[in-house]
Image (cartoon, rainbow, N blue to C red; front, side, top):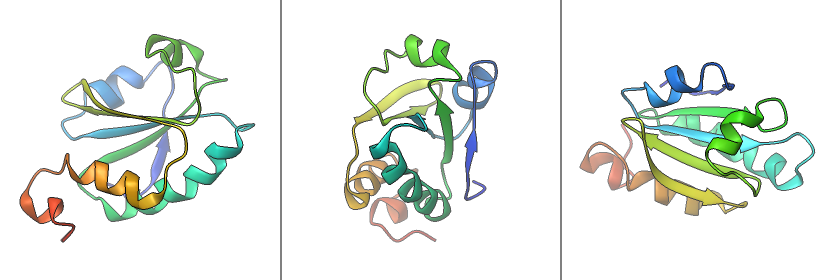
Length: 118
């Protein structure tokens, strides 16, 4: 998409995430969360690399309605939506390679699945 992780909130979550025609990774985070600060730069890198999906970040303290709706209780939580449906959930900090490999299973074609992103 645009290669950056953009902020999303309670008011625009439905349009930006559930209404997207491409897969969307939502990073549920909080400023006080140490592991969230570790995951942030990894997602910034992946957003630049995986151009077939969108990356957004939701601050659970500022936007508690959406976090509660998806029962986010541990941080960081990464939820991936495709066609408005939840298709992948990752709770807790994970290595970059693990997150990337899981996301590649959702890629739209074989080039992406093989890690040969063009």
